[in-house]
Structures are given as structure tokens and as C-alpha cells.
Amino acid sequence: MHPVLPLWFEIGSYVVLGLILIADLALVVKRPHIPSMKESTLWVVFYVTLALVFAGLMFLISGGEFAGQFLAGWLTEYSLSIDNLFVFVIIMARFSVPKRLQQEVLMVGIIIALIFRGIFILLGAQLIESFSWVFYLFGAFLLYTAWKQAFGHNDDAEDGETALITYMKRHISVSPDFHDSKLRTVIDGKKVWTPMLIVFIAIGTTDVMFALDSIPAIFGITQSPFIVFTANIFALMGLRQLYFMLGGLLERLHYLKYGIAFILAFIGVKLVLHAMHENELPFINGGQHIEWAPEINTWTSLGVIVVSMAVATIASLIKSGRDARRAEPKESVPSE
Image (cartoon, rainbow, N blue to C red):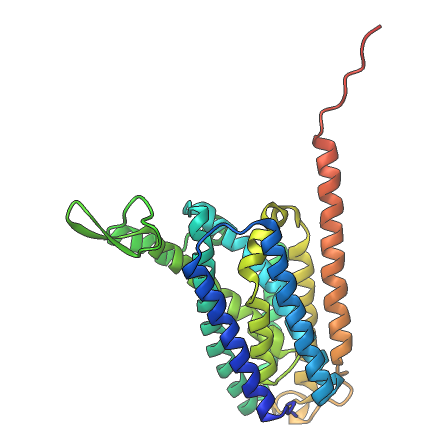
């Protein structure tokens, strides 16, 4: 059964979140600048606090199960969004995006991500409503994604290139330099595209790939489209500021991908177990529900997600500290 929240709460939430996103976009357009560490940190704290307040309101209005589903979904999407930042860093470096334009690029990327995730959420909700066996597919896909995340190698992500971008660079005229945030400019009387178009396409295709991973993951925690969508919005809000706050720290999170892979694998197993419990496929158990298949509750999921990310982060920082100490030049002992 889908969680049911008061209609006024759902509508009010969408209105408030929409206004916050519009205000954030207006700030980027009206005051383009490179955020300081302090400014970025304050914004990230604000958005995290906002998400916790939202969970608290859900708890007061509809109970702990709803709040727990939101928190588990939000943390899952937030961890996947941080992983997304790694690719954004690669894209920014690959195309030499000037620092002063990076805020705008990130904001456009976040808007594109929201659009794609909204589409996939609607499709996913419809599939789940019509075909319970889709949980088998979601679970298998997440297990494959977890394996690829931990042990695979993505050359496109490494250099920021995709087949589409390579094709476009060969077949359209692109200026060698950025011209502020313009997509088109005139050079020697000829209209040409700027590198900003290629950057937006790279960000957009990246968003599609991450949406394919993240939407099945959160549907493994809750089947409420409202909770799924709001968890995604809160995960993406503040992502731009998080990019500037973390800075070089991203490179030090060596084990983050393993923490994310474990979360995806855990949710994949949870989805398969849920599919077995709700089984209607005639060639599995004669089309009957598999009653012995355990159901993993929301609070267990939340605990696994928090512990996984904490262990991955702490282990990464310990490794970075050890590597830094090893890299320090040893003091030479004066000869007597």
C-alpha cells in the first residue's frame, strides 16, 4: 500500500520547493561568482536542515514510517548525487570551464536532472502499479550497477566524452573559447556554437545515466511517487554549493564508490525479496506469493545506508591521512 499524505501537504511542499529552486536559480543569474568555502558550507547546512525539518513535519503529520522512508530515500539519493559530483568535476576539468561559469553550469545540470528524474519517477510508478514483477528487473539492475560501481571502469566518465559529444564536435562548428554563458556567438562574421553547448550535453547525458541508477534505488525504499520526488529534490538542492564546499576533498574519498556500491547491492537484494513476496509470475512458485521471503523494513534500510556511508567516508579519510604522511619528505639525520 502506498503511503498516503494529506493533499494539502503534498501541494504545499511542491509550491515551497519550487519557490526555493527558482530563488536559487535567480541568485546564480543575478550574482554570478565563485562561492567561498564559508558561503558554500552555510548553504549546504541550510538545505540539509531543511530536509530534516521536512522529515520532522512528515513525522508529526503522518507518523514515523513516512518520515523514515523519506530519510532513507533522501540519504540514498544524496549519496548518489555526491557520486555524480565526481563526474561533474571531470567534465569541468575536461572542457576547462572557467570557475566563474561553473555555478551556472551546475544549476543547469541540476534542472536537467530534476526533469529526467521526474519523467523516470512517473514511468517507474506506472510500471510498479501495473506490473509487480518489475521489482525483479529493478533488483537485478541495481545488483549489476553495484558490481559495475565497485569493480567496473567507465572510460566515458573518466574523460568526460561520450559518443554523442564526439559526433557533435566533428559535425558542428565550435569556438575554441567560452563567451560567458552564451551557447552561440559570432566569430569573423560566422555564427558558431560555444563549448558551453558541449558542456551542457555532457552534464545532461550524465544526469540520464545517474537517473537510471537512482530511481530504481529509491523505489526499493518507498513506492510513493511524492516521497520519491521530494527526496530527489532535496538531494539535488545544495548540490551546487556542495561542489564548491568539497573542492579537492572529493579526490580524497577513495572508498566512497564502495559504500555506494554496497547500498545499491543492499537495495537490489531488498527489491528481489520484495518481488518474491509479491510474486505473480507463473513460472516462479506457480505464480503464488513466496511467503518465506523476508521483508526488510524502512528503519533497517536507513541504518544500513547511514553506516555504509559513514564507514566509506571514515575509511577514505584515514587512507588520505596515511598517504599524506607517507608523501611528506623525511627529515634528514645530520651526520656527526
